[in-house]
Amino acid sequence: GAVVSQHPSRVICKSGTSVKIECRSLDFQATTMFWYRQFPKQSLMLMATSNEGSKATYEQGVEKDKFLINHASLTLSTLTVTSAHPEDSSFYICSARVREVGGSPLHFGNGTRLTVT
Amino acid sequence: GQNIDQPTEMTATEGAIVQINCTYQTSGFNGLFWYQQHAGEAPTFLSYNVLDGLEEKGRFSSFLSRSKGYSYLLLKELQMKDSASYLCAVADSNYQLIWGAGTKLIIKP
Image 1 (tube, rainbow over the protein chains, first blue to last red):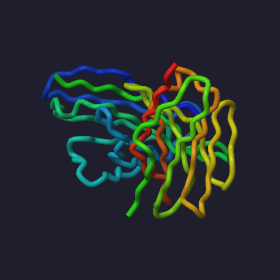
Image 2 (image 1 turned 60 degrees about the vertical axis):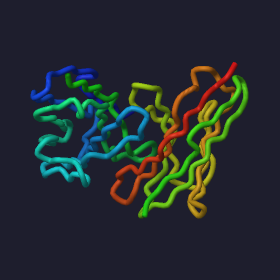
Image 3 (image 1 turned 90 degrees about the horizontal axis):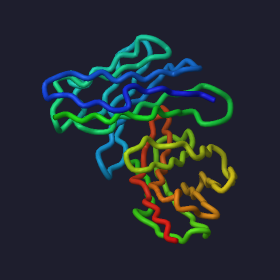
């Protein structure tokens, strides 16, 4: 089945630094990937939709200059949290659209726990 | 507007059966998902329904009625490890997921 690999699983960084999170589709081509954020005891919140070869579409309230998304190939999308602050500490999860007959059309990575100190 | 409703919390006994309901109103429909999420972990895919009816997968079953905007997740022979949050999500016309707030399921011995 389709596998989405997300790396790193955990990262601790200092305030003001940048962190890059990778999301890879291992055995399929993902023309569309989604990035979510989840704060403790809250539901997942869509941050942006990433389409290969074009600019990401950000949800209202998400700063595109702070959360840089690059989807340069059909198997890789990256989310860079720039100038991270403690309030950016959260669980970040990607998912990829799978174009196959039958089964789930969306697959999730295992998430990245970001802690900004 | 778009919204997904599911109960906030449910309690059940080990070995029993529990049904978690989900109602939805969305613009466009490309299927309904159920995910299981343990604290601090990413959601784990349980089921995907795009046609009306019941899908059975081991101890878990999921039902969909598109005309009623309704789904349920049925868990049988409950085990302690089933204690988790269960998330209902609907894919809209662009395959963006609209999430329910999740149902925290507590299993008691």
